[in-house]
Amino acid sequence: MFQSKWVRIPIKIILIWLVITLYFYFQHPVVYRCLDFDASIPIGDAQLLIHEIRVTNLDEDQQYGYGWMDNEETPWRLKIIQRMHELGLPINWQPAVFKALTFYSWPPLADEFWTYKIYGTLIFPEDIDFDIDEYEPDRFSLYIYPALKGGSGRLWEETLRNAVMVYAYGKIEPQQLDNPLMINLVDKENDRTTRLVMTPRWQKERPINRVSSINQYKSPAEPVRSIMYKIYSERPQQALDCVLTELRNNFPLPTPNERLKGQDIDVVGRLSWVDVYKDYLSVYRVDVEVGKPSENNFIPVQKLTLYTIIDQDGNHKLIDWKSAD
Image (cartoon, rainbow, N blue to C red; front, side, top):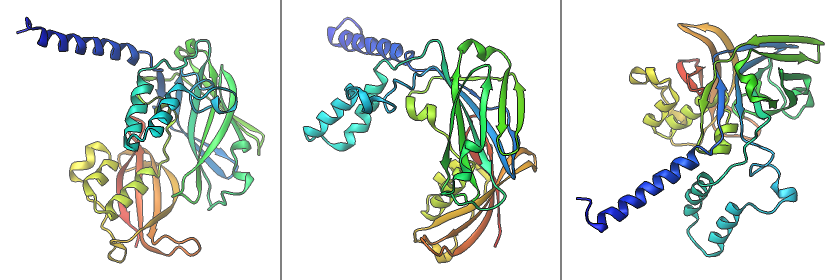
């Protein structure tokens, strides 16, 4: 069967391609994730929930998207995409080509110090004005010891009126990952320090899509917003993707309100944290209102209470809902 050169040549090409692909796969950065804890720490009248620690050997200072615009030449991958555009090639080719170019390349990897990031949610008892500086993460400092302290930031969640997603980052020596770590949170408002000592159980990953997979972080309300939009756009099977896997077979979806069917909707809500809900620990309760989009006067038409948890892969999933009408 393999004596014909017309058979041997394609097989050799495929084998060479597989070897090259395997080689470049192991050039991708490593990501270690710790998901097996949920810490709730008071900061003034707010509540900080720490969800995840993520450590990677990707050198973000050199990786595309961080500093090349200021003082470096345009990355060669972008030059190829620009050339495709100049030649008039279809735009829908560009994402696939860019992914392939990114995969078959050598990313900048750190050696001595890796980057760590701590992700959490800051919940306030009242609705907040996102333009006011008092809700900046500068009101507290969050870092790992022993490690090099970096900085912090925030991400708005458009669905939530009373919460922001926060993160802190720094540098850590990779050999420290095998030892107990201390998470330090300094409440600058009340001059109080909280220390959490833990021995992380790391999950090792090697993401294909380097930047988005390493930096991706979603809020507890993400599956709530997603499931409501999918229900109102009549995509029930896709809506079930927002539900915890083991519950999908017998999970009743919320029913769309007749007054909103076939129309654009907006979803807003408030977040709270529940120690125990039914048989689940560390549950997020989202009280949402669904209505027509409006810049000045949002009028809710449907009210629901939905509950989400973090699954074993670190994704927020829906476990239950109730009508609040």
